[in-house]
Length: 349
Image (cartoon, rainbow, N blue to C red; front, side, top):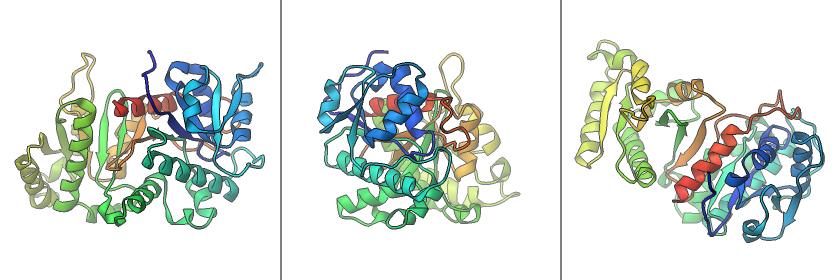
């Protein structure tokens, strides 16, 4: 693959420095220099030098400190540029939850978010955070369950609107399947309360707008039901009749190419890309977190990409966590990180 020409760099945040985030970034630079060219790490130089030494047993490729994001565009391939955007990090133990690590990770994400919003960088790719470490870091990071909520709050603040006026949705995607969630990090009981005409219609609008830009046409969207067999005509629940069917009728009046509601246990197979390259649907709208994420992750968590839709910026992320149990061993798979950078480039057009 030939790297796309870009006039502004992509910022990559290292995630929790005690997890595999720095390691998969360093490995991405070694394995996919055509993809990482024009990118830089917004984080800590020492953390990335440690990570590069971890993934390369012999003489390591250089980790160079840059002074501005723009300098990343002139760095040679396999030279990993780092912009020091946090206080110099202490050497932290691999694989342990540490409040200092949570704060460093949060500060890097805030810097990158503001840089994208202000136009200094074209997009951001975020390595995994550890939610417990982020919470342990204290204010302001303890008020966010994860990346999505932090980015949403910062984007709303920049736009001068409330968080409610900056609705976002999570899309998980790999080469075979895309799914967008109506609700994200809430309990199943609370998630069911979000299945309203307004909530589902908002999800459809956000997905339609984002994928139209990505695909160059309006996407074919399939809506998964809430209940087994999509309620079986009201025998197993009435959400499909009372919420989803009226919602889909409204969406079609707006010109959306939307279908369903379909039985959740079969709709994902219909949307999966076949060997021929064809698929019946471009995306499945899932009603809650696990309904949508289990199918994508089963197909290969190492290939998946998390995309935040609805923000006035481009943000992608690997579809896995910090993997504290393998951190520091030099064997973490960077495929999802590489795919996340590729996805960010695609969304940049």
